[in-house]
Length: 130
Image (cartoon, rainbow, N blue to C red):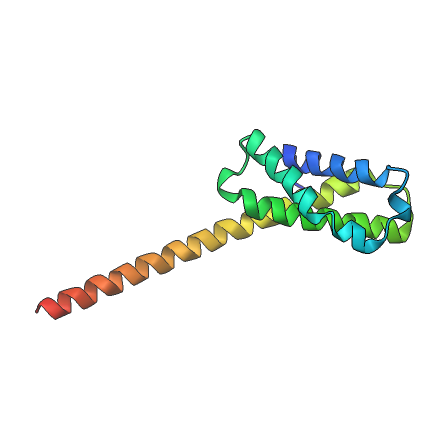
């Protein structure tokens, strides 16, 4: 794992631990845990905006981390094991890093496609002028 831990990963880990340590968590149905996704995403989104983190990627980051957080919660609900905070943090940080890495690759690919389309357009336009 990268030595730099994102504040948003720490925040999301804290959210997970708050839910897991709540007295009613293990009595909550899985469908109700899944229904928390939107609320968790909103909390993450607000934190990203408050911290001025990933402003270009707020929606993608908040959605991806919210889904990962829900998967972590469901895992702990089924295993009924004691939470391991550093593992939760590692999982969320890894999810964040892979999401941002994928976004950079996608952005680069889209930029290359846009440049190629522009060059093709210029070529077509110049050939019509001849």
